[in-house]
Length: 322
Image (cartoon, rainbow, N blue to C red; front, side):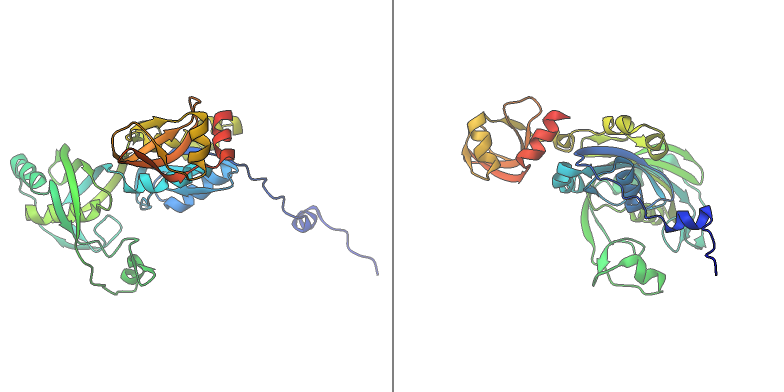
């Protein structure tokens, strides 16, 4: 009995899959996340394109939202919490006169009301929600309850009681208003739900509303104008992709900086406190003698530099060699 020769298709199926060689990539990539993709899916695609060993994103954008998603690689992942805690900026489009089951365009329309507003009324409503306000997180959110995201309960038809949270809306500016469509720019603290803001604004105006589009334009010091699309990144060569990485300290640009000499650098990287002639500060970025030698983060209390998140000597050298 003769064995059947393997066809090209079966031979290819039997061939072991070639493993991608991961690289010690360090830096921040500012991605313009496309519509319909989860933040984690976007992260995994970019991680694959860069062949990066270690990666993380700095705050979830819903699949229906687009815009700035800072992705951290290697040493930069140590500062992802800084971006998570930073103020954010968004451009939001509200559909006035219709409330939906999810608070956005994905849900069923629950109620329709006429829209009869003046610009003065809309401006007054925006002013009423500027400053510190309390928000109840939406059921259709990634917030966890007993280990499960709230949206999982919502999809099962369950409603979980949620406590209100205090957030700060720094500014709401009207970008455009065409009867039933209102476009606003929002600057806010971390943890602000723009979907909830849209619903609350609609109720304040008496006509109801839901969020029909959302685009993040800033996160702390980084801006959407410096971001790259996934398609553009995929079309680049490997060298070009690496050139899109910004140094990890781009997330820390709003902090004061401090530079140490070679002796203090070695001790600081070992976690030792140092005496410095600098004003107290809750957050500082610390550098070694070289121009781009980021060592990590720290705080200053009573003239003492207290180490926070530190890079390893290998990571510092990698950044200097980039």
